[in-house]
Length: 397
Image (tube, rainbow, N blue to C red; front, side, top):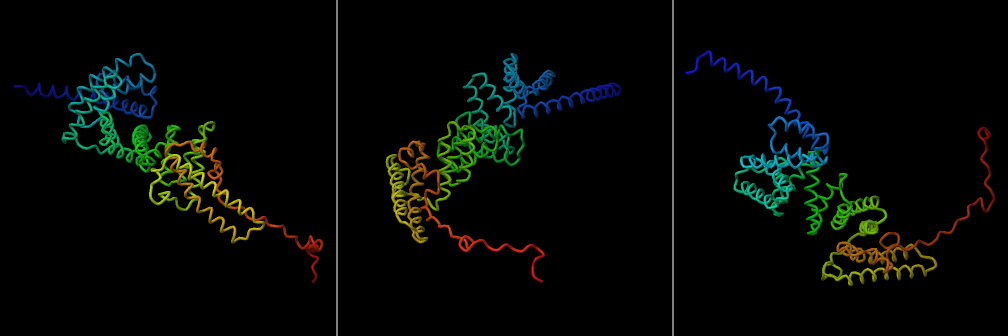
């Protein structure tokens, strides 16, 4: 039986230890917060010494070790492999009892960097399996939603990964926290590329817009945004995307220039038919049939304009009539050009040999020229100069 004196001595010792450890624990927590803030901002060289101090305390978890490894890798630190192995040892212990997805997420990344592909799949299978049987709760934060989506993506389970990536992108976009930008871009890129490959253009445009709003969008992704926007009828967005692509790579921008010109042509066209002949969809036509429609409508435009130019003095009514005929040719031309762009056909080459590039780039080519207006002689040119106005104060009283 413990004496009262021993009890109070032990209690005093306990209080002393807690009091002494408190400031150190608080300092370590603050250090870790600063390190993670710098890490999330991509400032790895600055985050690295702070993370190293936290790890040196001997109380850092596996995720902290992984972050230190990543900083070391970005600075070519030879200690990176040892740190990664330490992260693996800790994360393998932590993941079994973890209630969220952080440990599993970093463990998969660790295995991947170690080249242990089978272990990546095993880890992802175990954790997603626990989630599916209800052992782990559905994530509500965007970061945890991203982590779950990434685990499914590690298993190539795209249908399972997609809804979690979609949720996290919406969450990141709504919160607009700069530190979360890399997660948003990774998920939006994953979703956008798959959507464009599957020709789900509306979904692709949404995700690729998230990418284009930041500085890290690739030229290919900007081009894809132009195509997706064009195919859903958001012609202003398509023009904006392709104009940006032209500025980035002006020396190899033919596709972007033709895309931008086509977007403006479509914007000026009232209604583009969903079928070229009332029976088939545009996707059912062969490449030759598309080229024939483009050439035929271009020839029709030339004939209409030649007829109009053969009239010495067009009346307003005649000009409107010719313009109406040109308006009838434009929707089919635009529809065939759209389908060509969707298929990745070289529109520049086709337009050059077909002689209809001006119809894509200049909307005024779809109008007949107005008759020249004769200059009307002013009265003073016929009857001499007008009398000068009297100077102020010279008027008659």
